[in-house]
Length: 85
Image 1: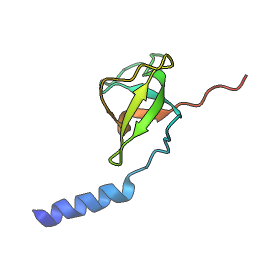
Image 2: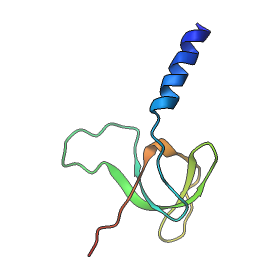
Image 3: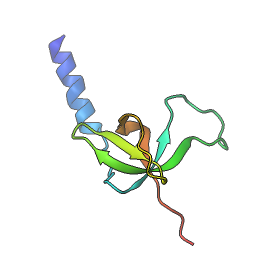
C-alpha cells in the first residue's frame, strides 16, 4: 500500500504545473463549483495578490485595499492579463 502511495505522489509531483504568481499580480478567483456553458462567467475578479505562503496559499485584496478574510488555495487562481488598449 505504501509503495502505491509513493508511486502516485511521484507521478503527481512530476506532472504538477507551477503557476507563476507573484505579489502585486492580478488574479481571477474560480469557485469550486463547475460552471456549465461556454458563455458563462467562470472567474471572479480580478483581485490583487497580496501575499503568497510557502505552501501555495494566497492572500488576496480588492482594488479598494480590503483584504480577503482568509487564504485561498493557489489552485483556484489564474493569472489575469489586462487587455492592451
